[in-house]
Amino acid sequence: MRILSGMRATGKLHLGHVLVLEDWKKLQDEGNETFFFVADWHALTTHKEESYIIYKSTLDIVRGYLAAGIDPNKSTIFVQSAIKEHAELYLLFNMLISVSRLERIPTYKELKENLSNRDLSTAGFLTYPVLQTADILIYKANAVPVGEDQLYHIELSREIARKFNNLYKEVFPEPDPIVTRIPKLPGTDGRKMSKSYGNIIMIDENSDSLKKKIMPMMTDPARMRRTDPGNPEKCPVWDYHKAFTFDQNELNWVVNGCKSAEIGCVQCKKLLLKNMENRLKPIWENYSKISDEDVLNVIHEGNKKASEVAKKTLEEVREAMNLRW
Image (tube, rainbow, N blue to C red; front, side, top):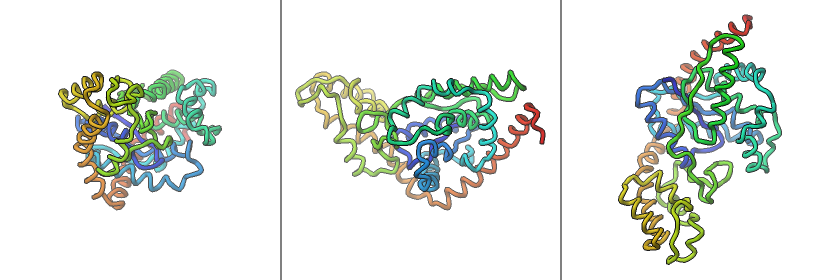
């Protein structure tokens, strides 16, 4: 399959991204044709006043890709704005979708509520799912790895592909979502982990900084005292255990100990820290060894490969729409 996904250039990658990158690596190593990009234009939909962060964020994100095992010899790694065909296809797709349809997308309302301190009244913010569709379809991706909150966007991509194919000519496949194994890893405050919410654990933490963020994390509010029994399903720390603790005996120890109050939250978090460090240390070590020059070389080569595919798709689109100039 041809698979595509990307991340917005609004800062360094965080812990939630590590889990996504593990899924990407698996898809890459299974022999799929994988395209992974940095969505720098998308960053402007919420961070237009902070465009100065985009270039460095792009370098940091690609460094994170490489540190987590995304291999430029197996995958095409590129930057969205370097491939101008994304913008042309985005313009053409905007002719196929109504404003009311975009306003009904749940993430549009959710982000407006959670980022009320930012100006999200722009046409760019409203139509960013259309740009996502262009990102996907310009490479004729068959599948897109996404979290649960992005499923509506993939459905929009399928809808636009179907509408284009019916109206003009069969050009695009209808992409399927590949839902990530951990749909939502909460932040340190219990909400979704997001750079925009300021509740993140970064990909390049170290043992000391990780400890400082994990140990104060909120737990089940019912456990006000050490002797109070708790419910792991109401505890954000348990979500981390499901992501980073693989040993079933350890998971049973956490569940049974929490419910019976045989263990305290500090013991639970110490086990989590051990397992998180075991998974993250290889990424930390790789991250520190990758230079900006290494990153730029990967981006330049990836941009060339992505551009070849995008140009070919746009030729088909223009032909289908009678835009032959």
